Image (tube, rainbow, N blue to C red; front, side, top):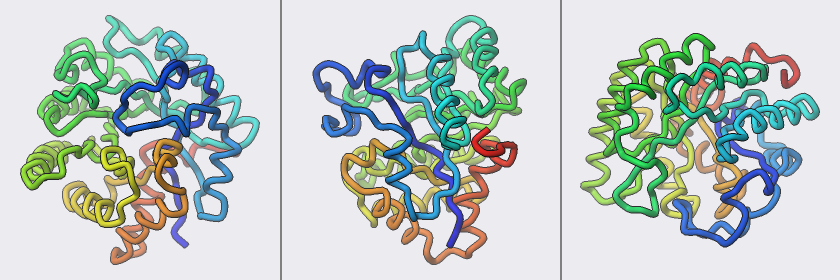
Length: 301
């Protein structure tokens, strides 16, 4: 069995996440009442039980921005207590004049491996997160992201295809930083024209050798576990980036809104069934281990 690293999942306490409190709002992944509750590490471990997942990477879950260090502290405490997860991608405001004070606070937590600040903006307000479409071109953000190289951390990059010109500029401005493209560029327009635009933008971004692509969250815009859609996304992304620059992530518990972990993993395994064992190992294990430096961990540390 190919060993698996889940390079993108969350755990949470509901009281820490403002977006899980109060009335349900329209969101990118549709109705989400089923996850407006606790999602502790114990439930995640139950979801992956018997499926060959050996390690995992926690990705920030949008705590209140001023609680960014508390989030990392809580996840680290969870890892020290249970052995999971094995790496943390935290949050830091990279638009502040100098992020080093906050990055230094995060550096106290041994499992820190990167930062995600979601930059995705869309003309459809339902898909919009960032305040403006061109934050990747912001000089202050570029300066702060470049500083991640001093910490040995990656930047988890979340943009739509229409923003990838700016993402290319950001990657070029920070050649010593590895960028982990979230969800293979978040393809939301599945028309022939939409797919063509996405592929063209992805092709340009893939020319930047410091960018890798996360194969994750492919149910976001269709709200189901679609085997054919996952196979197409995997094939097209691998064609552009190659297996050594692609890594699997479950996006649990978001994807739990419409599927089980076993069924989701089965769809990804089906999508890679015709690949060599070395290629599958790269996608499911090696790329994530390298990018998030999981070899440095011992027993969840």
